[in-house]
Length: 219
Image 1 (cartoon, rainbow, N blue to C red):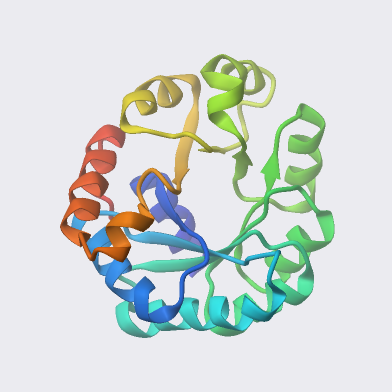
Image 2: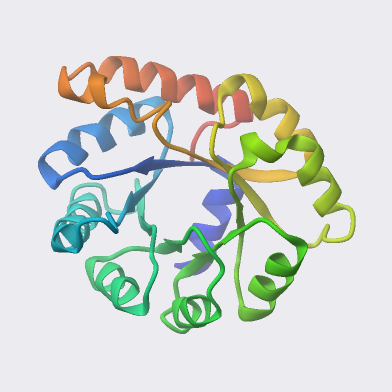
């Protein structure tokens, strides 16, 4: 399964980031994203509310149950191996963190999952790669820009970077040209107002714009 997930990231290039959402809302959202061509969803742990962790795990489980391999669910904002195991037990296929933690990366790989830790500096990139990271989440990409990614890729061209933070259809082309392998997209796509008003057609339409921007079909 690891290779399937890695392949989908390379091909589809887009992971939708969903924060603070329960299963009853995340399933229609996942359907809307799927209709728009996005087939990977990261459900994040809310570190301000550990009591909500179980709801995060249940949301991941719900996506896996409803969509099977049509939509690959993963866990985000994973700061400890405890959260990692909760996500793995719920069926998460990939683990995303805002930082590079060697213990989490190694345990993710031991469990047969795909590792996507957060990095910013060259030192963090090399450490995460040595620990077994499959992709490196460069965050916040909009703040450092395409030029920074290109500079990192010069000596580290063998590493695969995902741009996260401020990614829009309008800047995707520049980031792809700089060497991005894919992107994580949060609030700009997973619009809470649209979800509240059940304007899922708008989410599907915007998802399709992102898919068009990366030049793929989301599969």
